[in-house]
Image (cartoon, rainbow, N blue to C red; front, side, top):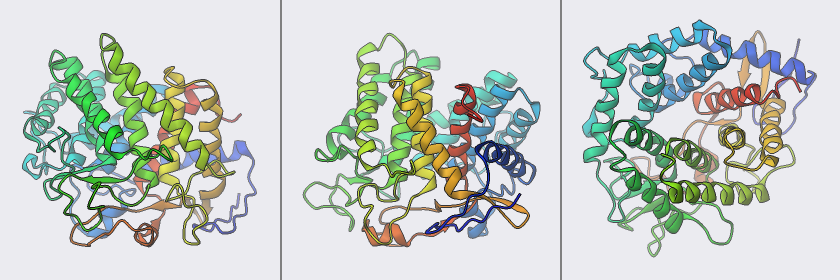
Length: 398
């Protein structure tokens, strides 16, 4: 089977049937697993390029989540064993975590904690329960804005980034619900209301990538504190945070649950105004006519996954099921291919941020300048998670 693929896909030649694409994806899933471990995960391109030793991070955590989902569906123990071995390379018996420094106050480091709930449930290993407390301890002292939202990182003071809601809130809500008598569930919920009030654009219904309460960053508007653009992957993280947090909230918090569902429904509908005919979305969501803009894999996959998962759990209407499937198939058509002897998923923005030592200014030119790569977990993991939803919904090979 031969499939020609140009990663940025001004042209793309597809000569596989839909069934063959799904077979290809099944092979791709095992290809990544067989060529990765905790010391050298082949999907973590950002880590590979840095040349540094691997550590506790959200990128690997997203892949572990995907493989845990696959285990629950397929009951193939190789997926659970892989996840257990991978996370055990960091989590010690006393619940401490190798390479994890709480005092970095990096909100991204909360995300790996989400997998600990499932690993504890599936393996019964007490170290995973203890490690939840270790991760939670960061949230106890995490710096906050005056509105009450967690800072994105200590190195980005007074800043809220849209991606940070996904990194922290699903873990925070689930921990509060299961292990802390729901003491701070409302605190988690309130951080979503703040983001909706401050970071949502009234004209498009989309959310800006970042907000600086201090108004000091080079990338922010000095009146509003907001960044300039609607970055796809940040919106993808955010819409998935709405789904996962709503699913973690206790049923007694009916108003809060319904408000999260309302935010989800409104954003899902507003996104459809910017969807490409292929099903995918653009790197900068509302600027499809920019010559350097492109259809981006990771953010599109996150939205696909969020739609499909939300439909299965009755958070979104049934019509979003077909929309989620169209996004998913659009990614496969455009970016999943065989190059030589290797499987490849392309069209993934490696990284994008605001400020920092790189002085990232949040302009359109900046977002288009970041590397576009293949086989990176920020694109691969959401695609695999979306695939698990397609399997659950009985839509695979349809």
